[in-house]
Amino acid sequence: MTQRQSGVIAVFSGYLLLAITVYRWQLFTHFVWTILLFKALVPIAFVFFCWSITRLFKLPFWTALLVPLTVEMASWFYIRHTIAVNQDTDRHEVGVLEKWINYRDVIQFNRHFASYSPDLGYVLRPGSEGVHSSLEYSNAFKVNSFGVRDDESSLDNPRLVFLGDSFTMGWGVDQNQTYADLTGRKLGVKTLNAGISSYGTYREMLLFSKIKRDSVDLVVLQYCDNDREENEARNEPDNQGQLLTPQTFENTAIFNRINEGYYPMRYTYFLVREKDLLKRIWTSPVQVFNELGGALSAWSTGRQLAVITPPDIKTPAETKAHTEYFFKSLARIRKFYKGNIVIMHIDGRYTRPEMIHAFEAEAKRTGDEHLYFLHTYELLKAQDYYPVDGHIRASGHAKISNALVKMIREQGLLTR
Image (cartoon, rainbow, N blue to C red):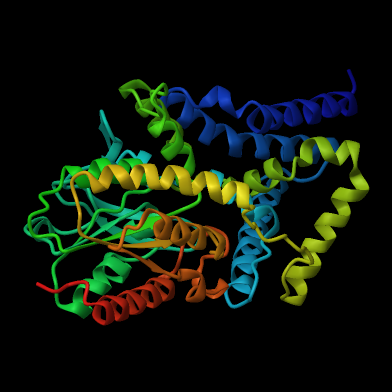
């Protein structure tokens, strides 16, 4: 076998090893040791592939290390560029980075914060502290004994309780920047932030039922589009819902370890996998080079990608289904809490009016006079969202807090 033949075999071997990490990554998600193996195999695969190419073309060995390092740095700086140029625009166009949400650390399954609950699936681990971070933020979390992101004293006779998912919890902002904390301080009343990431209205109801409510004068209830799946599943009498077992919870927590923290070549791996470069470089090379050229052009000119992402507009049929199951969950809350509720809708990256208008119409039909609606779509602009992550930034929390304070004072919702 000649040196060139052995070099070609080495190139295809490196390509095969890299393809395994890209197209068979599910093989590595079942155990902690396989997660660690995956994180080691990704940089090894890139280095081995580059080494095989340098060997084929008789290049110095050090280039096998320099090329992956250079590519990873370029991937990182391209990601930073995409974030930077989208922060102050009226519409986010982040291209392939829209899929980064599949690669971010999910706090409710993070080994430092995750805690299994038989009826709720999970709460935040009582008494835990730590840092939750991604591309656009790094925030300290402190969890009280009830398993929510608030201090211990908030559990003692709160007058204002906030229910919701990651937006209410404050994903992407510090604890004192959440609209729950800001609203309480501006009004001078004790609040409890009971928002937990990915909770739908049904589990928010279950969590609220566990809170001592004698002192509660007002509830702020936040809805997100992804609440519908849970609300529908848990409200159907013949459906056991989406209950997690201890085993499925543990499996998901193990899988989440892939996204906990940085490992070498993580950003390059993301771009290669999401652009399907290993296949498309053979099947549609012209398109691949055009896309890479467009990305480099946007980078060099400091502009957004030339992509137009259509807005996600809910149809009447969709809003009807959301409304039906939201109000079924709300009816369960009304069995043990008859007081005032402020309802607001927040969705990732952009919040549109269709949902809250449908909720208002249903409230009028049911005649519940203790429901109030905050039009967050009038408050939040693109600049108030993280362009890649999609959660609201501190500016968005501040706007919501100001509007809540104004509504609560004008409507006299805290009268005691």
